[in-house]
Image 1: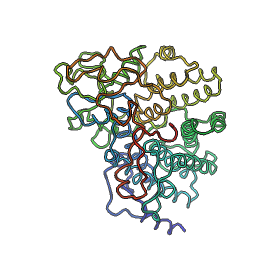
Image 2: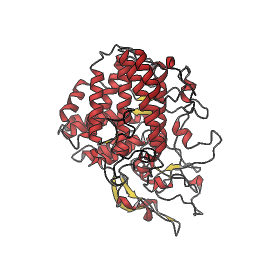
Image 3: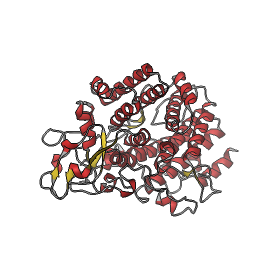
Image 4: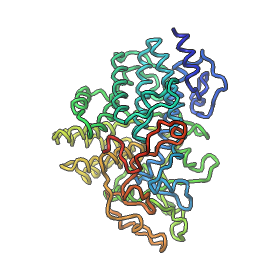
Length: 497
C-alpha cells in the first residue's frame, strides 16, 4: 500500500525544495530545485518545513506588499514606479500569477503529498498540521480571487479543474479541519516544523481553532454561524502567542524575511525602494499619538513623520524628495505572522458585540488592543481605546483599530478585514486634493483621521471604492478553459457582499 501511494505521489507532486536537506538555511533558499528527487526522501519531516517557508514567502512578501497599498498603509516612494499601479488600486492577471502558482504547486501540491503519507502511516498529528496549512492557503486564495479550483484541484484526472465558489471552499476547508481534529487528542507527535518547532498536536489544535474562528467570522455576514463561533469561544483553546514563522531568517540574500528582501532595504546589493508611509495611516495614528507608529515606521531624515499620497510618486516635485518620506521599520529577522493574539481577541470582541454583550465585547476589545501594543513593544493602549471606544458602532471601532494593528505586520489580513467591516470608510477628501501634481501643492492637513481617500489616477472600475478582489491569475486562466468570466474589480468576494 505504501509503495503504491509513494509511486503516485512521485509523479503527481511538484517538489521544489531539496528533500534531503536538513538545515534551516537550506529550507530558506526557496529557489533550490533538485533535478531528480528520490522517492525515499519524500518524508513529512523534509517536506513540512519547505511548505511552511514557501507559504510564508508568498503571504509575507507579495501579498503583504500589494495589500499594504490597497489598505493605504503604504504609498509609492519618490521617483520610482514599481508599485504605482497598486497605489492606484490596480491589480493585473499577470502581477499575481507567480504567487498563485507558488501557492498551488509549492504549497498545496506538496501538502497533498504530506497528507497522503501521514494518512498511510496513521500519523494524525502531521495530518492535522498539513490540513491546517492547506485550509489556511485556501482561505488566502479565496480572499484574493473569490473563486479558485478546489474540489478538482491537485487531481491528475482534472487537467483543467472547475473553479468553485468561495462559500463552497470555505465550507470544505472547515470540514477538512474538523475531520483532522477528530483524529487527534493533542498528544500526537508532528513532523519537523519551522512554524511550530517541537510542538505536538496540541499546538496545532489551537492554530486550527484560531483559523476556524477567522473563517467563521468572515462567513458570519452572509450565513448564520453564530452558534459555531460561540462554541469555539466557549472552548477557549486558542494560541497564547502569535502563530508565526520566526527565529529562522538569516541576514543573507535569499534567506532573510521576505518583506525585508522585497523592498531591498539597501542590504543585498539592490538599490530600488518603493514603500513609504501613507498619510491615511499616519494621520489616523498621529491623531491620538499612537506609539505603534514608531514601531512600524522610521521618521524621515529630519526626524519627523510624514505621509505620502496614494496614486502618485511625487516624481516631478522639487520639494518632496526621497529623504522627505518615512520608510517601514523592517528587519531581516522579522517574523511572518499568520495569526496574532490581537487578531483572535478582535474576532471574539466582534462576536460579543454582535450578540449585544457590550461588557464582554469591551473586555476583548481592550485585550486585543493591549496585545497589539505588546506585540509592537510599546505602551499607550489606553489612548487608542479612548480614541475609538467600543459602543453602538462597534464595526467602526473594531475596524479602525484592527486596521491600525495589522498595518505593522500583516497587510493582507488588513485588506480582508477592511473589505469585510467597511472601516476605515472612504472619506470626502480625495488624493487630488491632498496633492496636486500640476501645481506641486501638498496639503496633508486636509486628511480626516480614520478615513480612506480616493487615490490620484485611481482605478476607474471601482467607482471611488477600494479594490475588492484580484483578477483570475494569468497562469491559471490562460491554461484552463473552465476559468469563469471575471466579475470585475469592484465585485466583492462572497463574504464581503
